[in-house]
Image (cartoon, rainbow, N blue to C red; front, side, top):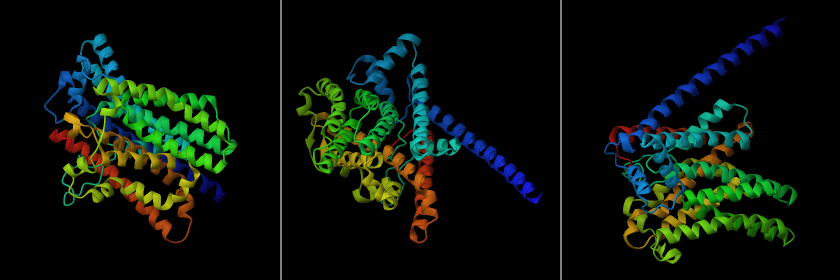
Length: 400
């Protein structure tokens, strides 16, 4: 009888905890939707106020056909043609953002195999909106010169964050099947190729980081197999061919001289314009992923999404550190968009890795249990600065 009473009491406590959890997540999402929606609305045409933002300029250029290399420019034109106002564009962008949050949460649930959907939604929102640690004594800016997921003044970034999660997910599936069976699935390859084309058409920077990372992984697999797995490796490599066609077309549209005039080498030129301490800026931006890497470094050997994103992040960081666009576009820092979206994906796979291994690490003796607490603390700190940055941007209109 006592056992039955204990089970009944435990069931009531679990039910109350579940309801409380749902209320907390609903409140957090209410605040996020309200804040982000106002920020987007106040940056777009019909309700535009003088925010320090290039979002409204992007919309106007798209409608005027200036530098229209992105798929999102075509979406703007269609929405304006149908609704004859820019409120429709703002609503589209808000929906795009929260679809990205949903897909981020879905990825965590699927890959980390977590049944608690409320937890996944909360972590997904925190990953999507996280910001660099703001330490003005080292670097005075909150955004510029740092790297963070929660950027709200560039619409193409909203698109590639969404598509980037799908790219990482399909690569995770492809890598798992290849290492398990040394075979590929046509369906997974087609999906990976399709989202790669979408990513490039939205903004090319993500593919310019991820595809070199994929090439490194293919070379490693080829060496490991000593040539035995040549056919599936070629099949994976062929997924990038359609994207190269899009990238070539974009370079012809944006740069008068095509691909050859799209970059010049000037090491640390752009970085040094905005931060006084480059290594500390990296630490402010990547504190959480670096902490998780200490615990999850053996995960790199699995050659899955974790290794894929870390390789892509290193490549994107090197691109930003070494390359500039020649001429009038040099100070735009457009090679930095790659590391911004890779920072988001790095937080995503780091959160997934942490959640996947929490139970095993917590049950271990020694320093790893305490380091696990540090990782969660850093994650919450990045999430808090993401909220603080949102509030700062909303109240001051200054994203820098």
